[in-house]
Amino acid sequence: MTSNIKIIKINSEISSIILNEPKTYNSLSFKNLIDLLKVLKKLDADNKVKVIIIEGAGKGFSAGHNLKEVRGLKKRDRYQKLFNLCSKVMLQIVEGRKPVIAKVHGAAFAAGCQLVASCDLAYSTKDALFATPGVNIGLFCSTPMVAVSRKINRKPMMKMLLTGEPIKANYAKEIGLINDCFSKQKLKREVLSIAKKIASKSNLTIKIGKQTFYKQLEMPLRKAYAHTSKMMTVNMMAMDAKEGISAFLEKRKPVWKNK
Image (cartoon, rainbow, N blue to C red):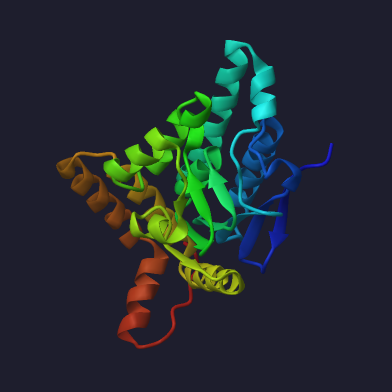
């Protein structure tokens, strides 16, 4: 069976994951979630890949779960399996070693909005729309709100959840759901520019930093400082930290060993 999740190698250090099922608006069905998880793990294990981009084919990013599939599941254990699988995909993005950038056009709704929020960075077209519209069909967006509520404040989150109304890209930027929005022509160039900038850094340093960032967020202040002090010490013992400091002091470009 062919996969609707495609990998496009942009260069040796940047790969793009394409959600490629336009006829379902790139729905996060069982099959697509399984394939997406496999692809994410594959790219995360590839030492040559430094940055991952996720985008959608066709009219937009992703409409979330496939409601035709959801209606047909019927049994409690099947529903649980689907939502657990979706959570695994989101956790893989957050807990993975590589920075993941969402490149959004069209709509990112429900679990599609969750996917955007789970990514480390997110950029969209100016006409993109974001929503957690489950309340409109009697199914509150409980799992999507885990990711989105960790990126934006409570009042705008609750408005999105309680009304189900979509928000526009400029407002999504204002509340911190996305980093920025651009014209359709400019989006590709801007995302590639930020991806190349990240790829130019030490792979090891980025890995340590990303994992430490998410871990400390969930800790009380004192514990967060203790953990980050420990991780900075680990980082300082790496060859790349020594090389980076030397390069800065010697006014030259660092040569990363990723060690």
